[in-house]
Length: 141
Image (cartoon, rainbow, N blue to C red; front, side, top):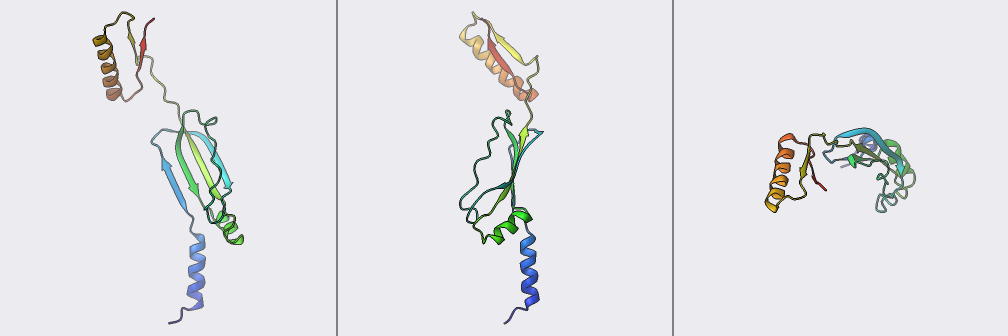
């Protein structure tokens, strides 16, 4: 059975328009700060991955979302180079700072007994779970 040329051409064109896209969502609240690399160099159909995107200095609160994508242009470059050079687009959305409210601070007196310290940490855990916020525990000096 022979496949018509038109069907082969149409299948080839359709497969070239598809773009690989993967997203990792960390669950943190995203900020407006974005780190993007549109042509991160990978080689031999991605067997040699691109360099790590350094985001620690630009995203001090961590990453909220990481997206990798082979855009149409990235795929076109890969086809032209016969898969030797296959660039990828990487986009990292930074996370917002998690601010602790001023009333979420529990102080442990300097002369506190062991059971009082344990109770304070228990209260901090309960408060954090109930209010869904950060609770700091500080030992008084």
